Image 1: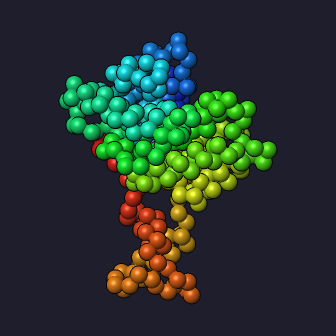
Image 2 (image 1 turned 120 degrees about the vertical axis):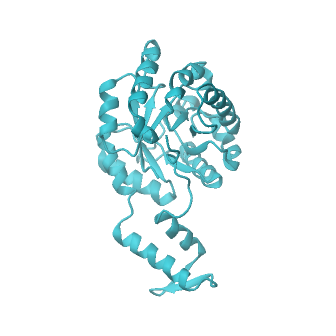
Image 3 (image 1 turned 180 degrees about the vertical axis):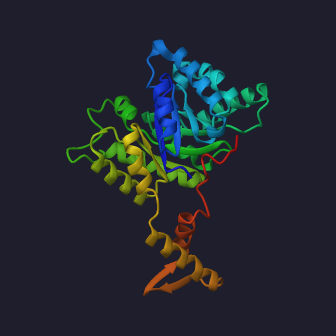
Length: 296
């Protein structure tokens, strides 16, 4: 399961190569915010060429297209689907209707390029507008293509007309905490990966680590990054330590030894089914689905 998703501009061969050579579990090749309107065609061309050269790494490679509201989405998809990236990241994803709409477009292109139906997955950025935040619960049932949900704070601030998305302490302000929680809840209900948003201050690695640890403690499965220097911290935080794994194995072993009980006692602690579920998740035996599990 990916722990880190690194955004990389789709119009920079140098940054694409550097991103691929780094330690990010997955790259999101960006055709949206990272590319100026005048350079969209160049970005599509370079991204398609990059994907074509990276057949062995395609399970790591996602493409963020432009939002439906821009009317650029179909041109983005036409440029990249033939090269079969792991999936498409859809910004300003306004509920399940947008996932279904994107899925129909992908199905047509998969058929055109003789790819298996459903080969290309979807990650929705589901909180970038007020409307999409309110429509997040529609995603709870999931979709066969849906691999994950990410939340975004920067575009949401613009849509709300907010002067900032954080308060004086650096914590997210109330509307953004709501958006974050709704994304997490919807992803868990759908059984897909919950991905925490980017941390934009690339110099403050200590705050990045604290925010990443808090996100993991909440239940997020991964975090997005906007700079290669952020990746190592995200990966470290999301890698269970030896003690954590040992405790998880003990929980699983205890329940395996007593399959008919609902609660066991370990080190004077009462451990029940939610603990078992969490332990299995840590050990890689259970949801959420692996967002890069589709083989090229």
